Length: 379
Image (cartoon, rainbow, N blue to C red):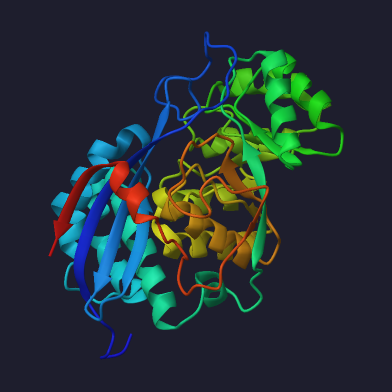
């Protein structure tokens, strides 16, 4: 930071809720709960965005993890986190340590941390704009200009026929890698049969099992050659259980719900993970993602960012994925959107990133206003 670094002059909070269809043909019992974003209870997806304007007039965007935690994340942004950043330098490197210390008593994850994540991402957007470069090129001299994507499917009630149908739909759109939210051998077998033996196939079981149940399940699923098994046990940060499973089976992934950078790094160092999956809207923004990525390089743990977003966090994750030394597919929700907020919304199976400085997030104002459900300005 120099004396000329501008300060945060204005923060807008924008909660957008957009309808989507998952294309389900069958609606019935689920093995995920109603708070899970892959559940049939969701027919709209919310994006809790921040637009941070600096004293030189630039605008940077960020996004807090939300879905049904948005009321709490909004309160954190409006009540304490946003006011903390106002009039401070619009510089992520100098501001982050103060923010981390100021809010440490509120926990290493949760709505306050999600709010900090949004602000940090917006400051990185501003920094890249000041340096007149896309964020990915600020993060790495060897960044790519495109990223391949994998289709992140929703939950289809463990129905093998329905699972195979949606894998087929994704294949028709050009996807060759797929993440399920199913947990039974029958559903996963159907997905593997439809995807073919060479396709990358993963599943997120959302902390469904105890360690003992996970052992039985993973034995039954070995035949289907999963690239990774995501969050097999509850609680999600049970590093000891994850370590034992990863040592025995390999291919264990987690990290979206780790207790901040330190919690995720401890899992990585303990050998609990073959794949680390931090989420930019949860873990502390771009700054925290960089720390996890650096540790992954040191330890040989593959970092695959988690991304069930369509707003600024989608672009931030795409920029981060493009900067990784080992090419990594970007997770994109496999949903049908009647209308889109910006050119990258709903894109895949490959995203060609723009040369626009910063994140490259440029929402269409008419769509933003149409689906805006809550708005506040902090100055």
